[in-house]
Structures are given as structure tokens and as C-alpha cells.
Image (cartoon, rainbow, N blue to C red):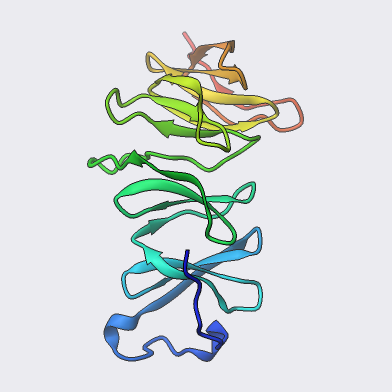
Length: 185
């Protein structure tokens, strides 16, 4: 993965470096890297404001657990040095629905293109929880919220439904508790 030879910190650039097409935008840091947009692609800055990874990707996510999803023609996962950790393998959803979610507790929800359902991969890209959920969120407190038949419940890291899908809406677990919305009769 190429890195930039540019040695100027970001803050030395003006908004229009060479013309109106060179728009430069930055976003908050996550794990020592900040997304930035230039010339129609996303790249990553280091803490000093220098380009750590060239802007190569039309879509990219923030780093979580040392990994970030990037999209060119397929979604792939890179580490903070730009090395492929999960090779390009997940097709983008043409309806612009989420296809991949950030890693949390060693798992990331990914949408199976053929079925449209979510499952979970581990840090090597191995599908460890088969796609069977309409929507799947990240793990927190050892549990992840998933939607099944228009109701929300929680699975553990092995994919077992430990809190049945019975809620209208749910939040993540924090300190052993999660906010849920129940149907009132």
C-alpha cells in the first residue's frame, strides 16, 4: 500500500490547493488516524497532520480496534499502516444500505450481498456468525443487537440469541445495562 511522499502537515494547505477540485476536508481522529478527503478520495492523516495513507478510496471508515474498512470496487479492511488485513471481498450494496460495520470486540457485522442479511466476521475476515439478521450492530458488553422479523434482540459472540428478539428498538450494553423500547398495550 503506497504512502505519501508529501512532507507538509495538513494545516499548511489551504482549502483550495491547486484549484476548486482540490477540496480538502478532515474528520476527527480515531486510533491515531483521521480521515481526510481530497480529489474525490479518502486518505488518512497521522497525529502530526501528515498524510499517513494517500487518498486512494472513494469510501472509507474510521479506525476501530486497529482496523478500518475501505471501498474501491469491493470492501476490504486495512490496518493503520495501510496493509490489507481482510482482502477486498465484500460487494457494496447498490441501494447504499450499510455493507460493513466497524469492528467491536473482535467482530464486525457484514452484509451478505446475495441474501441481504448480516453476519459477523472476525479480524481475519472469516465469517464466524452466519448471515441471518436483517440488521446487525456492533458488540458491546459481549452482546450485539440484531433485528429479526422486525424485532430486536441480542446475540453473544458465538451467535446465540441470548435475549430474544422482542423489542421495538434497542441500545448498546454499557455497564451491564441497555436501553430498550418495548411495545405497550
